[in-house]
Structures are given as structure tokens and as C-alpha cells.
Length: 208
Image 1 (cartoon, one colour):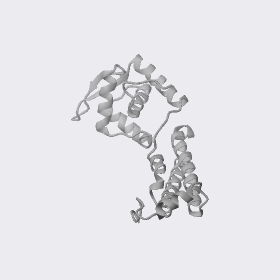
Image 2 (tube, helix red, strand yellow):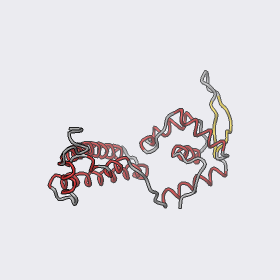
Image 3 (cartoon, one colour):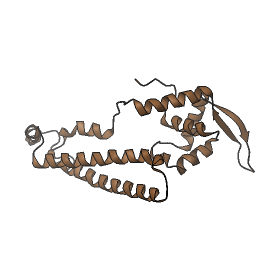
Image 4 (cartoon, one colour):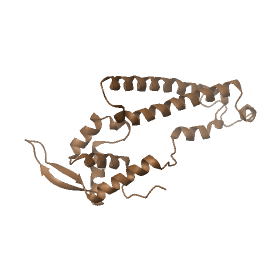
């Protein structure tokens, strides 16, 4: 079972991972995350980074080491991991890799309420998702091939590889679901069609 954490934002994990490598100031953290493409796996804004840094410092997981001024630039505080922070980072990372957790994707919520739409409209919408997923998967594959062609080790691309595998699996699932609904092979189709054929059905004429 995953532990409860006072600072559990994924951006906090990213900050601790960077400081695990060595001391940095926030601006350098942002630049490094972007250079490594980590903004694809961890959502962040420059303003939110400072809030996370403050929270980590408040919990004693990081601490300011020194303040530097370069030329006419504003002062920048260099932060480092505390021993507590180092232990927390490694524990958190090990849990993320080993313990599955229940997540709630928005698409899953949409699927759970799909009977509210007429079957033919659901097919149209799912086919549109298939089209977009095909474009996305194609773009992701092209980007992966390009980056690997530049000599980047697969070790530094595994989160993108994981995302690609999930997207490809979703594409197969959605494509098959649209096919089953369109052909009438999906279990429960009779009840679904009957509901929307009744006068005054909730979804009658909406969204079409």
C-alpha cells in the first residue's frame, strides 16, 4: 500500500530527482526538465515550481545552500536535498515503480456513461477518437525514432515508450469497440437501442 505524503505532487518528485543529482536553483530545474522532455510526463509551470520548492523546504526535504547573483540578474537560491529528502525520494520512487494504484482517466468516465448517447452517435464519436489517436500515435512514434536516431539511449525514453504502448492499446480498444457497436455485436445493444427509440428518450436529438 502506498504511503501518505505531505508533499505528493509529481512535480515534487521531479524536483527531488534533480536535486538527487546535485544542487540547483529553480530556474535551472525548469530548464533541465524541459531539455530532457520531462514536461511530457510531469505537468509544471514556473510559478508552481516555486510553490513546490517552498513546500519541500517547509517539510525539511530540501534546504537552501547559498544565494548567487550573476551580473544584473536577480539573486538565485541554490537548493539541495536533506538526508530526509534523499530517503523520502528513494522510498517514493520505489513505491511508484512497484505498487499499482487506482487511477481515474477521464475517458473511463466517458465510457461509463456512453449509454446516454444513441449508439450511432457513440460510433461517430469513437471513430473521431480513433482518428485522433492514430495521429497521436504516429506522431509519438516519429518523435521516438527521431530522438533515438540522435543517439539518445532508450533508458531516457522509457516513460515515453510506456505512454506510446498505452496509447496504442487504447487505439486498438476504441477501434474494436466502435466496430462492435456499429455491427450490433456488443452485448446489451438491444436494450441500448430500445431506450433511444422510445419517444422522449433523454438523448433524443441531442448532440446530432
